[in-house]
Image (cartoon, rainbow, N blue to C red; front, top):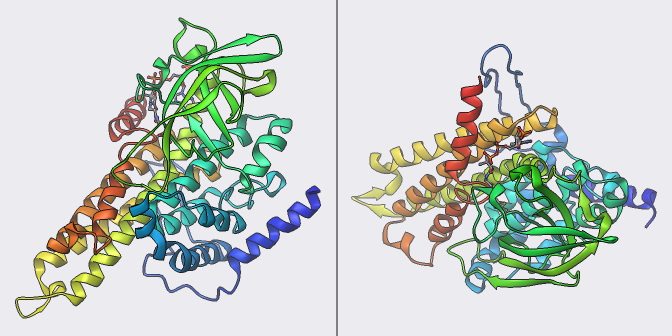
Length: 425
Ligand code: CAA
């Protein structure tokens, strides 16, 4: 497809997103008036009011999630089935490359729009949320930022369009939080790179067409020996290893990638040799905002269902929601959800302005993920015995929320990143 045709198609998708939206009367504060979230005068001030386009996007994605995703979430979780048809529809809506410019196949929106869409999709189904998040933030974003135009043409455009799916491989069986301790090696051989090693816990790997993958190109110099590569999943010597059975987000796949003398072309290096660790970390600065938004979506689904249950279920002569014990739980949930959303929007807002946002992303991910678990836990508790069985979604939200405290950096790693920033001043 010619670029002009493609730009036209991208516009069509964006107008599809916006289609039919008149007004938004969302209780979840689509107009957040933040004045001073800052840390003193040196911090940029944020006065966020969603643009009409962002309002439309939010409403349209919510309608899509309510109509198409939410009704299937229980079944997808039960079967542990990758939602191919839903991913295809998300691609048609431009959701697989939300903040990627139209020139490279994306919807050409911004990071805040991405966060809004991610919350809505994850409210419908957390597994769909992580599939979307990995393709957007962890695969497309580093190729956009660090790739050459030739790499963007081949390895970004079809992925941002959602015709193909990407994944991101940093962790290994022996290195998770200490990412620089990786053992996978890459050596030049003529016009190729030869890779050996195993990557662990890789979301989307089983369905992906390509992977942004990190390996040691120089041994003995720590993180300065790490380089980033674009690895086609059908390259010789690349295979899928163990497929994990998980507590939650069951409709997304998580597996290891085994590299046995895997051969990729010499132009597969992303960024400069030896600068892969910085590519990986900068990518996670954006990825963590996506996971914070996923946590928001899960928490909102949990709270909405708890509200409904507490309005319908009767105890001690009236509905549960008239009991102060329940009201206090609902109040804590609503407060934490709003606080988490403000931190997440702030991080996205900074990303959109090209400001370094490592600390703010870490704060957003830390707070939103832990709040999501607390909210899902209270929502389950409000359901009583019904929360513990599969007739209600409360137990799924509780299981799904938990991973947001682990992947893309555990809560402990987020605290480490935040503390380093605080100490630096
Ligand atoms: N942006 C750019 N550069 C950065 C950076 C960032 N955000 N963070 C660090 N760097 C640079 C530093 O400036 C430093 O550069 P110099 O050597 O030039 O000074 C270099 O990188 C090394 O930094 P550190 O000394 O801070 O490195 P460290 O070894 O102490 O590690 C860490 C830091 C924060 C612990 C890091 O290892 C980390 O984030 N670990 C967690 C890994 C993680 O999140 N894994 C998730 C896997 S992906 C996943 O879950 C995906 C999925 O499928 C859903």
